[in-house]
Image 1 (cartoon, rainbow, N blue to C red):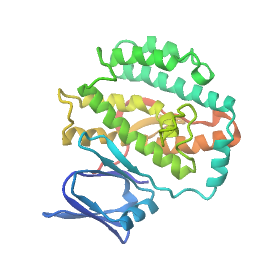
Image 2: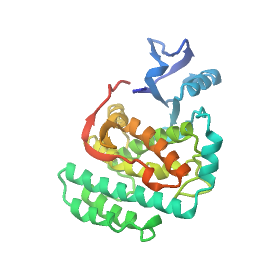
Image 3: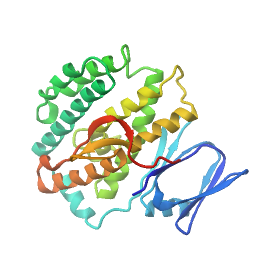
Image 4: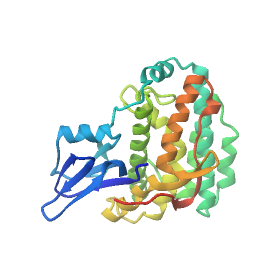
Length: 301
């Protein structure tokens, strides 16, 4: 199982040959086995990579995430290598009934709220019980918007005074962490055979990753706990902050009674979503439960 997010932030050339990614700088070079890599994150104006190298990375199911000057994603090169039954998955995805979509979204929202409550408890903050109450109010399709009500309560307990729409150092850490996990979710969905633009709840015609924005929701509180440990007073994240926040991919979560890394849980959830869609049963969807922050895989960059 891949366990590395490779971050490139300096002038470099990237080459792929013999199952290795070779990163060449003026003063040094290194090679990394493709089998170790889950994602390559590029941030800088002078990073060079050929279309052939991008294709070879895609063949190894490696996503390339390109960040702008604000450290937020400008582009995602998503591997389109999928399983042999992509047509079957796509047909089932398109044919989903409204009832099934509503039941899946109900399950996602409920687990997100429970994870928010657990995150507050793990962080030793007030509000866990008050937030968890909303999980019992989630209707199919979340027609009562329990998600929104829980979020307002949750974020004021997590970071009093926070406005998610405003520039804020904590928002910067959250947004960077969410971007990393969103990329992992998009990668897993495409590999599993889904069309990521066709969402369950998110349906924007301008969003190529609606389904990723659905499935990411229960994973967000994992990011919240990690981001909370690495926020400072600056809107611009330092290289050290970015490095620490990227490690969220290897934070432990509970899934199906086992402790696995977030990255592994994302892949398992995507596969379980495929089963839920093909079998017409939301109960088949496996979603993570937040646990105290820990790393369950070797963390290398």
